[in-house]
Image (cartoon, rainbow, N blue to C red; front, side, top):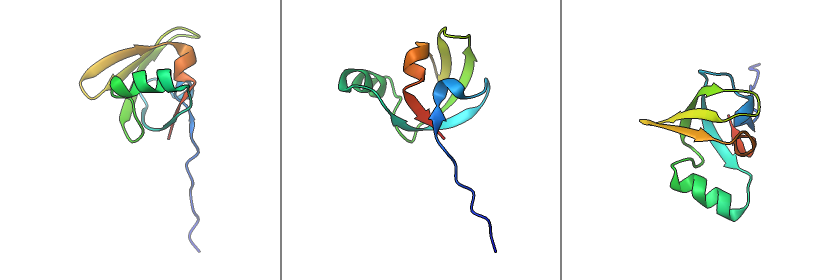
Length: 80
């Protein structure tokens, strides 16, 4: 019998530095969600966490871009 492995989503802020993850959902109000999507952060997009300090900005690599997000916003982006 094969064992099934299910991935559970977690906030982006909980990922390890250097880890590549895929955005599963954005759990924020319409304004924030629209802004993140305009920056290229939408479900299905792969991102790499390039750096983070405790409750400081999260630095992401998205395609060929480097983005900085507020720590609170990074907790509203759920990844696999």
